[in-house]
Image 1: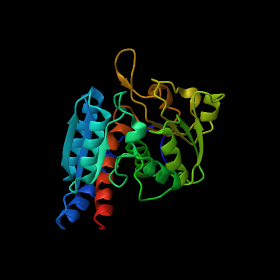
Image 2: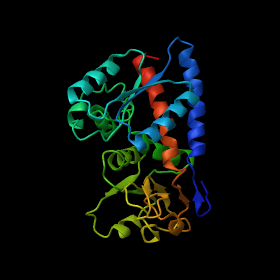
Image 3: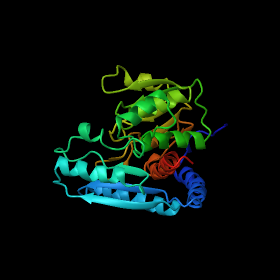
Image 4: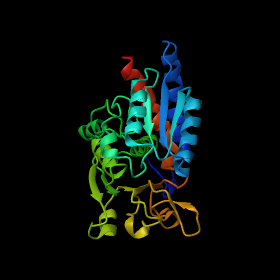
Length: 288
């Protein structure tokens, strides 16, 4: 695709396109007497959890997907939490489960991640789904944010075959899974982190640069090759309390061929991906 420099690629058109196809899927599934449903399991009332939850519930409603929130006290014991999660696992009407993380410190995620039903785990909490992402197994559920990155690249016709993709960040939430998804599309992938030597130099070799490091405006124009596609996954607050990404947008927009903004970029696609995963889980669980 020929593109002008500094094209700002927003998430809303991507989210809208995904939502439209989900609405049709949901109608088809409902015609068989099955109602796709997402259950959110939330411990406490963290403001960022609540903000994401509002967006997710709104998106499910738009898609015709049923929804339920299981809100648990912030001081719930691990034993009680596991009991509640097992109830949701066993609920035949629930097809997708989203557990908000990070969880309070007294709850051991390393134990809990083995409890959630992998078939209903629509945001890649279970090690089974982590393994499926690594293996390229289509029946798995990659995390919503890395999948949103891929949906944006696909929507804007970014050809990844043989391209050099550089990912800054190696977390299990974004960095590692997005690297696997890029590999699956035949990109050559370099994963960078805090110990990478000459980080700007490595990034300047990228045709596609994905920033997922969690540091406000860390990536400036010295990191970006002329004509690179820049995808900013970061959500940070700057010193003036404004929402910003990991990329210094103003400095990089002129050098990149395409760049995602923050806000209105990757984050705005994640709830659509979540809805898509609920529909996929519903189909698999019901053999349709």
